[in-house]
Length: 275
Image (cartoon, rainbow, N blue to C red; front, side, top):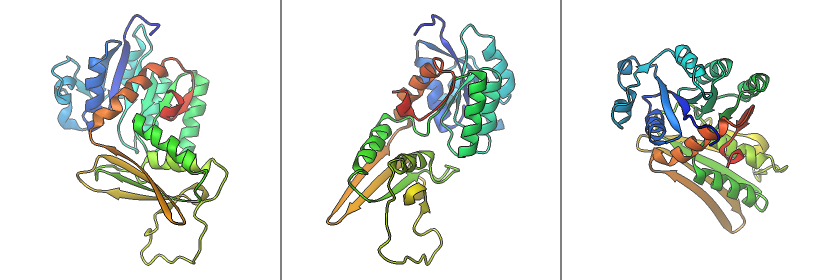
């Protein structure tokens, strides 16, 4: 780190499962300080963010006023960072507001449209403010995607299955969409039909991403986050799978993103871009 002062961090979505993990990780990082914790659920307002996260009191109360907290971040010696794990319905405004205040967003919330991402990219560029949008903070998932791109050079048939807990609001997952986009960027069309298919129930064959890559979404209690990329060819099946068993696996990627976003002046999409 070039800055002697720790990076001030605001966690938006502080009482959520990911928000709690981020608070614990930030409080344990020597080069960061928890400046604020934002949560819309009224039952957590006023509670100590550290106690809610399970890491002991940190004397930072959970609030529901994002703008007031962002103002505090602008008064620090080091430019602040907002980590957002909220909801698809609010993430766009959250990120745009942070950029407007000169606070650098690190976004783990999925559900942003391509048009919204493009708009935020233009806004961040004009403001010369770094912004990281990361569909998945897991190093293992980045490795899976890299392996999938390599395998796609040799297979013409592929489908993606993503499985998440039943409290996830958007489908398909941002990670599955990103994986499909990476496969679609190779200049080929997958899954050429051999028969005329008929869906007896709408959606039985999943959604269709670019270049005819199909994505299937599963939502069940007991799951966290899982993804399979299944390639098929005559006489063989090649399956890549990543399973999340604990959300702590995302924290090295989150901390890396917090550090890296202070070094850039535009929007960057995907963890692989900063590794």
